[in-house]
Length: 67
Image 1 (cartoon, helix red, strand yellow):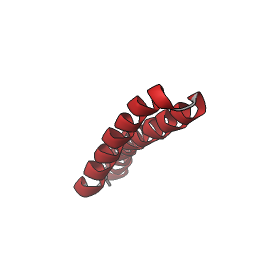
Image 2 (cartoon, rainbow, N blue to C red; image 1 turned 120 degrees about the vertical axis):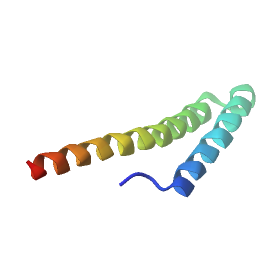
Image 3 (cartoon, helix red, strand yellow; image 1 turned 180 degrees about the vertical axis):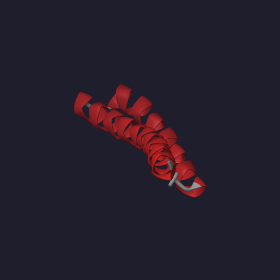
Image 4 (cartoon, one colour; image 1 turned 180 degrees about the horizontal axis):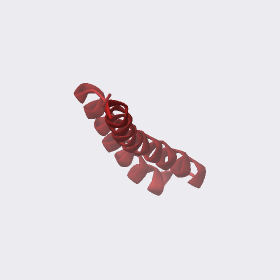
């Protein structure tokens, strides 16, 4: 089951805002703040990738159960 379009768009918006925050933080904040913001960005992007991968696994499982 793929992420809903609204959820995916909200994640994309959040990532965009976090990237802007990271750019600002890189100039004005301490390194741990930048690290945490970049980690959140990475985890949101990985969530989308994991969801796509799980969809493919589900397709393979469904396909093998039909055989």
